[in-house]
Figure 1 (cartoon, helix red, strand yellow):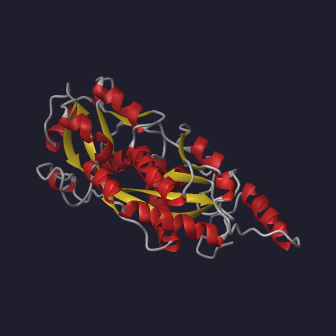
Figure 2 (figure 1 turned 90 degrees about the vertical axis):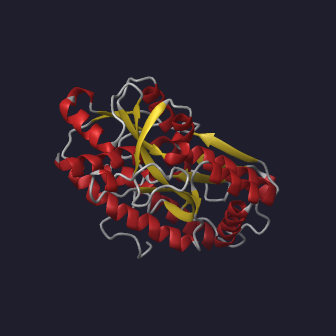
Length: 335
């Protein structure tokens, strides 16, 4: 096992079996795990998105997939498999062959869901190998138009005076929206009811529909609703203001001292992928992110393109994030 994995994480049974099969294949004469002619038989390359269509992970994955297809000369497919706090799509990829034809698009939930629930069905740091971070983006706290507030201090007063309306839409337990709200609760002393959905787009629909009071969403996927006046933006979650919404304050400067939350997207692959195939995929991702049309698309979403220098660097990002979310998970379980 990779010595960089946290020692307290035990490999899953599925991971152990996969490693044993890979070792057996490598020991058989005439069989090579390397695919020098990859992509094999020009088969499509599929990016599984464990969220509903329309969210930031889905939008970014589709932009990258289009350019990757041209670079690699094969058909690209984006396959949405939402549900169970991303477990449905994530487990499907963990069970896929490590041949370079199936990738997983991830957000922070990839590590936070496991930090909250060891029985979720997948282990991010042993069943997958990091490929690259793709973008980073601030989250934004929005409320439905019916809520009579326009800033953080007014929202805090409203939630304290109306505990029954202290409801927050999330894309599932352990999701970035859930953990962003958990940090908000911890720093404000509020008790907010979490309302889980299968994805960000469904959660946002109910905030727009005034069935839920508030939501922490990525600024990229919430921009359209904000600009169209369908929801009211209260503050961003990062320590610095967004360059796309410079007049929108941060939570930290608006009365929630110490608040800081930044999300990332990336791509990972099943454990056991041949090094040369992984290198080709990494190169294609980096070239895709440098494409002018992709950069223009990302800028329109209010996200920053932040490719990793190497898969190892992204692995370290995932490991560090897991440790942070493990600490947040303890505060959630203690309440």
